[in-house]
Length: 234
Image (cartoon, rainbow, N blue to C red; front, top):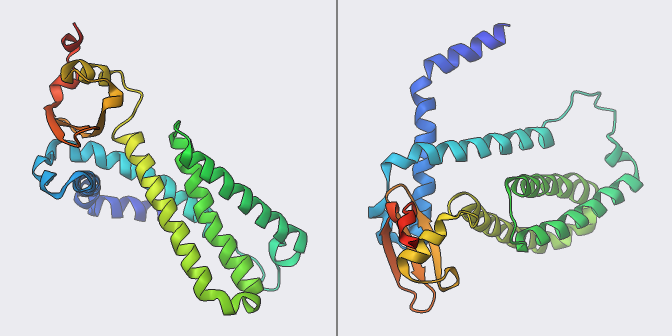
């Protein structure tokens, strides 16, 4: 009970900072999206959307923090007690097998068009679990065998991590910022006079829509209202 009171007191004392967190997260996310198109597009930054964007990021971060705690927080136990994967070779091999299967599944998900929030959570869980497997099984138990290849292993893990993070960010972008299943894209087709295959919806906020012509590579900035205007298709 005392711990709950301390947490409530901490929240009360830092309420302004807690309110600021979604704003900062949303602003940073929107900034990345605009820079991803072109640095000069930062001038189209929308202050009125940062809180809603930040709440999405905060929600996902809370899930990721929970996953991290679930994977890395150690249970209280006797120092002389070994966990199953530290004691039995069969369990070690099973975990490594699951690691390989998880890696293959992750590659499939990243290349699959239908990417959802559960997919993102599964990928992140696998990514964090992989770090634990590499640390606890490969490095701790077989470190002497691979010590001459540490530099190569670190480089390989770094490259794989970059690939996964870049792919996840791309999927994250399409899932939360430019979803492909919204009907309003049809209104943009009618407004621009182009089919969806002829342009790419790069980004939109509550004021502007950024559309890139596939052939000319030119970017057109459209008022957001046109994305909601059904009359475009009459």
